[in-house]
Length: 231
Image (tube, rainbow, N blue to C red; front, side, top):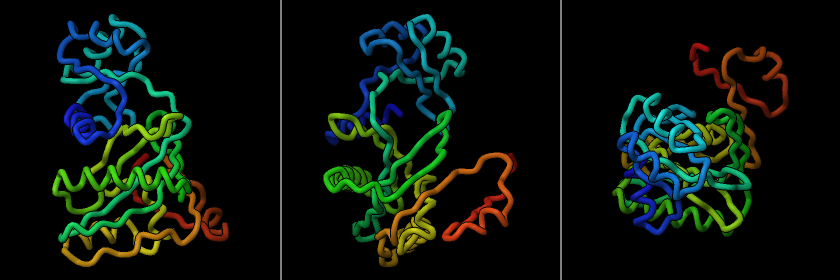
């Protein structure tokens, strides 16, 4: 997370304010962010893992120990209206395509639903410019996703995923070319496919017990993807 946020800032992409936490003695450094803050491990944090919200230095030091006393960061909480993500693809000859912005809802740090497109031309253009800069800086190839907070002052980058992303599962049926196909096209050096949305899509992330197949498939326009994972 530290390398990620440092990259964002070097490219002029706004992020939450943050400080590094390398030991319990660093907990007081977070005071300048204003309480509460969120402490996050720098590695292996996803779907809400490796994170704690704390409201003072003592709680931060305790949370850091609970998280394994590993290198971490503390971030100021961001007030936002919604969360959105942008998926981009860069090919073998630096050609790029972008999917429509998607609006995401998380529960307990895990993606619960996505609706796409989130139609805002200025936000779309801004996000595409920033993803272009990231992919160019990394000499990237394949699908890359950046999650943003949409605040009153604009977009604030939260984190990126250098891979196909769960907020892009709607592209399987909802876009001319899915994120999965375009990832393979990019890796194999093939021309990138059209990323335009075919209409509006909604994706629900089902965790644990699944609803009956016949109920889901009986809904006009609905599709079910069971990835065979255990609850």
